[in-house]
Length: 261
Image (cartoon, rainbow, N blue to C red; front, side, top):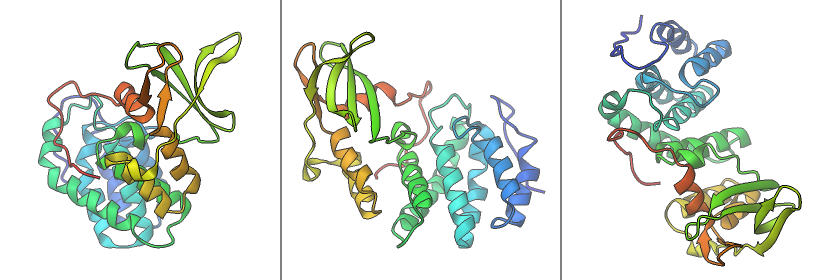
């Protein structure tokens, strides 16, 4: 059986994980039921994590090292979902710091796999999200990226007015949302030139384009474009303001970052 040494603090399925993880390790490519159970235990509903989730990362790394494609993708997908919860109140900061080399290796595996040709669409999107999670950009790892019917609510960073941002079939605009009249005082968005994007936004756009996700790549240029506040007429970068308001912040000194895109 797996040596499972965890400090008994916080919450987490300490005793339930080892037998399920053993099943996954025995048949990482074929035991789909064991993988479903492991997801439920380590990233409940794809969102909630615990100390046990992070303690499982070395085992997921070992599965990903084995090289069988189906198992590799499953391991990296789950590891990314766990990392997307790094800001939660999981009580595992010290454990995460000791796992820094494992986390870095998993991130490198995700990057290499993203560079493979002809990735299935679902796999490519899962790896895209995982990479963002390993870059400690949880808000973008978990984002919906609905650029057909997408709406974002942000506060104007200058006057704090609540601004509705539309990016989709209803238009690309900022507005005041009135529950009787709908979106009023609309202002057209300013799309970002891809060559002007930098940092995370540039990585997201370039990677989406390279993966063949044309709608996602174009949507990112609107998401990181500028919006005009209908109240004070100042402008701001939508994605930066959305992330500032929605990226979770850890209550302690925080886990060790893995850095870079």
